[in-house]
Image (cartoon, rainbow, N blue to C red):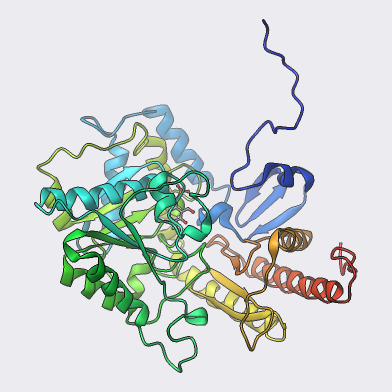
Length: 464
Ligand code: PLP
């Protein structure tokens, strides 16, 4: 019997990730993008938006870079595929050399993989295998942190903050995972009310290790600055203390820089803000600025040395795809040639200062924080109590809608996150600031109206 050809839109033709499909359909479906250039994208109707999400934290060098497209096309014409097994492409080797030259001393062996989640899985397997080879076969536990995001594979889901719900209905996840608090000065359970940080958030890492038994702990995994979790910039001293703790107990320190790598925070890698050298460094997203899927785990010398004589039973068909390596190499050269790391630092400081200034009087803004070109706006019901502003699904949709009406795309949530490409122009930064400030003002108006008993959504629009 012939398969029926006609389809209706329910269920949808294409699955949109991280969305309730029916809710998205009710909102009119996804924003269909037609083209993009620099830090801006255009929808199918020709409306333009400043992309304060960098795609999904990926687009660092900006959209539409001819040199990246040409490098990829040239590579595909020359050698379209070479799996990284007992053959290799010279572009993968060139990328490894160029990248390790940028990395902190000692981080020198690159294991390429297609995506960030696969890099997280890879890092966990490497960490456990490292101890296995070293004769410490009971070291299986991975300590992760609250507010973390480490991807969507089973390992990534298991290692991400359970509140993200990635294992809801599909667990159990990976065994041997523990969570500790992350530094979150504004909402710190230990010292938010104290005049200065007590670094209790670092001490809990040691507590977790000693409680589990150091002989059972393989690694501590964390983002140097959690991005999706709310741009949580750690206090000075945190990473130094955690490094000392990991060293004391023989626990590997894994830094997930999938979001923060390649200049996002105003340094090549966020670890550099605190001279942290992790044992394993996870990279992804901005590694090829979204032109190709490309991610990696970089091993510190002692890890690579221990594993090199052994067969590590791990790898993916498309790891280090030549087209992805060509894109990565082209992006690396652009970041360097155009001074995008310094630009992220300067433009980030400007964006943060302007957001702070513009939102200073808002009754629902508790804090504006950030590092480089990643900023978060903490929304509160009340500035004195710091009670979180409960957006709910309708509030998220409302905020997103108000931002888009102003030609701005941001991560519309609480905290609201702004993370544009590093090539952001001053005028686009201004549009982001105005868009965020006006959308937050609309949120306040909506709240007032709902308090007055009028249904949300009947508020007067200021523009558009
Ligand atoms: N690590 C971090 C810090 C992330 O934010 C993400 C994704 O958002 C990942 C890993 C997973 O990366 P990917 O989506 O490329 O698998």
